[in-house]
Length: 92
Ligand SMILES: [Zn+2]
Image 1 (tube, rainbow, N blue to C red):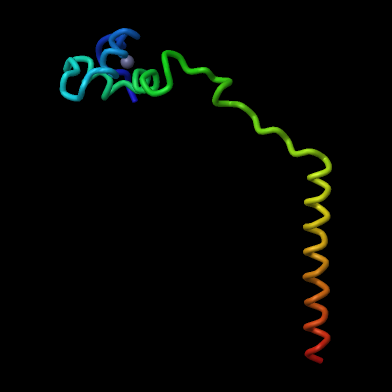
Image 2 (cartoon, rainbow, N blue to C red):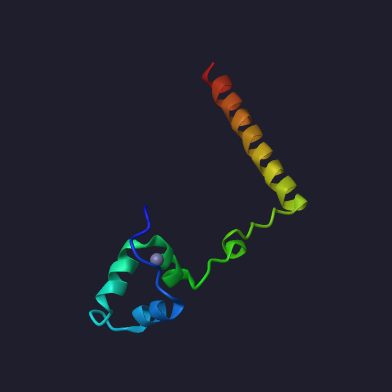
């Protein structure tokens, strides 16, 4: 998306657009906001984007939980093969 002609809105202009009732926004500002992704992001997320706020990494699960999950998965697989063996053996 190419930036629209003209400069971006200032923080004060953006605040004015956000607080104005619909229809009362200066057309020039509304036009720019409709076409400019940067100003839309500023309007939605604040003046500047904070990259670390969005990129907060999930904590890795603890080793105990990982081992517990692995054991449960292994038990489920073992049970599957056991029940499969029961079925196959019972059919004979
Ligand atoms: Zn802009």
